[in-house]
Image 1: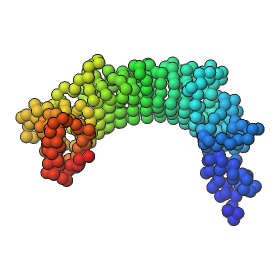
Image 2: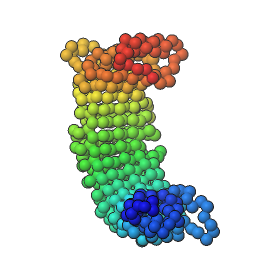
Image 3: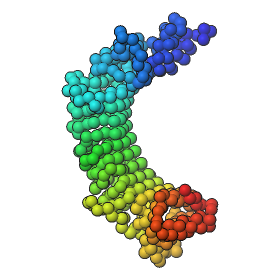
Image 4: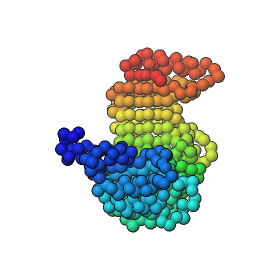
Length: 419
């Protein structure tokens, strides 16, 4: 290292980001110490200050380290810190910060809800942020943010929020292109309007009902979990859509035209049939379809899917390339009536891969007819995977059905596998 020019040493050392490594480099030599103010990124792991001496605090050490750096761009703090400490760091480096990641961890501390200013308020000191990621956030009141004009990426993981607080916070970030909210609780009615948003992932949880109204005309990727009512009207650019509710029901979906949609995933225990039917109609151009809904029914009663005409379904989804069926969809497609009098010209033109989960031996003959029809009419089929999942029966029908599937696989070894 001594034989290298100072600029090369400085460049190499500037790529170090772990705070403990940076502190160690300061002790090697004057040449190395002089290079450390040029680092661009500093990461403070969660346990880095577990063995501090009595006269030391994490706030002071972090402040001392970040204030010694000329143009800090990335700051990640997982270790505990105070509101005053955060304000002090951002006063030193807020003007140059582009990416900030904080583990706030105040979900269980109700006293922090009335802090003035709060930790969230202090983030306003980093006005030039392009990316902000927060862990463990209690957002009862809207943070006092003016506007983050350059902020394009916001991620919040594990949070308790009020509807109004989230809505006001997002108003201060008008140019977001990427929004990720995972493990959020306490929300009931969410209104989001982000005209530049391209990627959106919302994972809300809780036992109550929750509705979403989203206005994002440029969104291309949308993943929603935990909503009962969903309204997304401007969707001309949407390519990937995933809708799920693992703890409740999906009552209503209201989407605009899905002309660009390539991939659709529908998951949950219970969906109203009108919601499923509407999504299948809107997704007529879809190439990749994943369905794992166990029941339909508008209220408490859990009902099976109504009969779905096999021929009409594939005619209305001519571009379908991969089809994963898990839940009530496969039995619904297996109705005998839909396979009567099939037109000799009928083909499934683009289907290449099918994954089917079988959990019951009921209507075994109809199910076998559907499996055989997929192989017969899908001329481009390359792979079919049949998953046998916890198929139980008190009589021999389960064994007989499994033998039929094994025989079917033997006749089509180049296409079919059993898991």
